[in-house]
Length: 174
Image 1 (cartoon, helix red, strand yellow):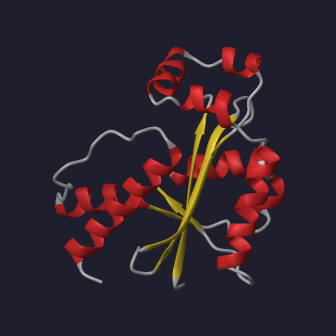
Image 2: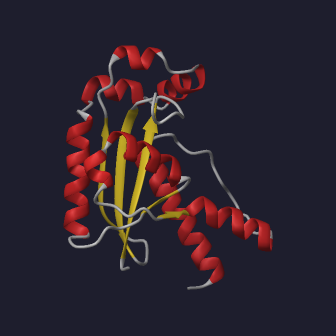
């Protein structure tokens, strides 16, 4: 594999069957984790779905300005799914790449439930940066010097995951 396909979502909650996707981002990197291409978009969500968010989600997505961006520039989820498919086909024309990210199993559940066409084009496998974090801490007691809280904006969180993975690989060699 000579590229990575990072994906991150922001959502109205944790239950992929009941909750909705609020933001989608994807980043393609080469195998040295240099960014080749990015995509990010807030997603239009019905007001009744927004009203069902718990207090943590409402506060977090208000502070990050995501809810404001949804109203100003949100796109339909179908449009975002097609953009992800175009990105995948451009960089992985014949293969089904695993998606990469931190706790990306969460994002994969939402993709499986809400983006059925896109899920057919990606692997069932994932590359989870948070697994590196847990394993390196458990085995060697290694922690990154600084681990700021995620921004809870999809593109910023991907960039943070890429930064973490670079640090892990530099620390433990390639």
